[in-house]
Length: 257
Ligand code: NAP
Image (cartoon, rainbow, N blue to C red; front, side, top):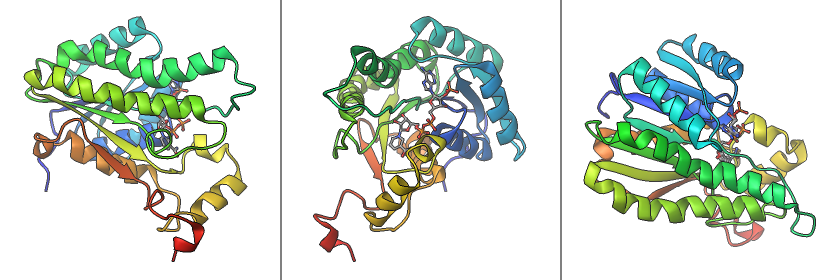
């Protein structure tokens, strides 16, 4: 059993829906003070209220990861409300589909500025508080797409998710002297509002290629993040946990049982 999170404050960026909301709900159920962050206060409030229905200390905050100023304000507000910051789940991300032939520089910038630069800004904003915590934890939501696999139309997305991991390895060295660890969860296909937009055919064909024969749940990711955030994970840094139902393992469709 992991040490309870009572008294620990966790920030989850991109927690208005999907994986972020799932992470926020699981951390709330484990007794943490949870800051639900979204670009708009209204969506953050809505998500926080839904999580709170199941109990827990959950508060909404506005924050755009593509703006350092916005992240700093968010971190300041969270620390003022809860008395500090112990854990940052840097989860916000976007995944528009665009072929290399048609990709506009603005699409490239949106994906990189949200997924990669957004990771930097969230960490920069939280760092002063994480440094004074008993022990600090940073958990990134990366992906199998980019670091391990590819998908047509996601070259920019894959680059941003691989960038997070390259960033993480050097960050771990800079953060270790402050007793802060940084690790990443690498989800496979997880059923979220974002993934639902890809359509039924995409979801069915993906599930068929996964050894566990299902798309993952947001809780599958949240529990991996929970371990990485725990006191017990104090000797784990710069590492990744792939949570994909075995999706990256088969060499071909014939290799699937
Ligand atoms: P989602 O359902 O589309 O949710 C995305 C979240 O990111 C929303 O809460 C959105 O909040 C937030 N967001 C977007 N841009 C933002 C910005 N500039 N500042 C702050 N928040 C922002 O996506 P998801 O599927 O849960 O994905 C979450 C993370 O998991 C992403 O990093 C994604 O790359 C990763 N991931 C997902 C899957 C999957 O299968 N779903 C697989 C691998 C990795 P607002 O719109 O309310 O601001």
